[in-house]
Amino acid sequence: MNGDEIDPRAFDALIELIASHEGDVVVDNGASSFIPLASYMLQNDVAGLLQSMGRQLVIHTLITGGQAILDTLNGFAAIMSQFPSGPEFVVWLNPFFGPIEIDGKPFQKMKVYLENKDKITGIIQMPELKKETFGQDLRDMLQDRLTFDEALASESLPLMVRQRLKMSQRAFYDAIGVVVG
Image 1 (tube, rainbow, N blue to C red):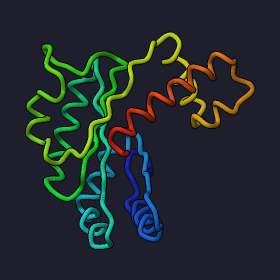
Image 2 (spheres, helix red, strand yellow):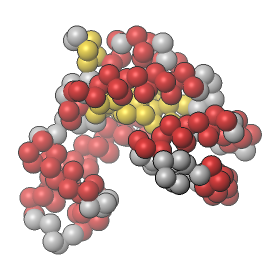
Image 3 (cartoon, helix red, strand yellow):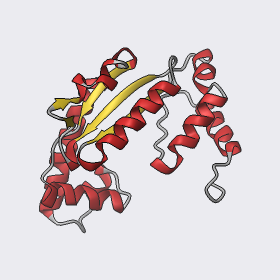
Image 4 (cartoon, rainbow, N blue to C red):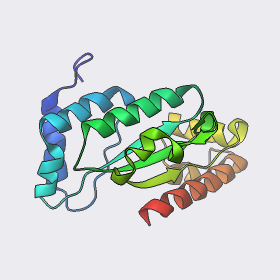
């Protein structure tokens, strides 16, 4: 980043790395670079380029419950409209801040889903976690920038924290396994 601007040449280098890699590649970007990265991919037809190389672009997008549900649904609608064809989409439903529903209607019955369901290859229903224990442990792990394996191997973490993280890992992997296989 250069101030608030994303350096498009840095994305060029990222695409070079992806193109030269043999296996799957995961680019985990935060909210601050999501729109610039999506714009770059559109302006440069990255999906078409990857497809011409025998690769498939899969975009994962997150819908959260609670106060952010409308923002995340609007973001989902925007990204779906920006990519009318090409990439596949996987939707992650995160109920940590509240249920993924509006007026009692779950995501799979919402207009935004029904209009885009043909482009969605999977929905990952993230597990509901007790905020005071499991949620706090997960939040701390992420804040410390640890993977599950690193946290579980850390003798500095209390036994019950590692137990809850192990249970969380299993629940997340089970949810992901429904889509990824």
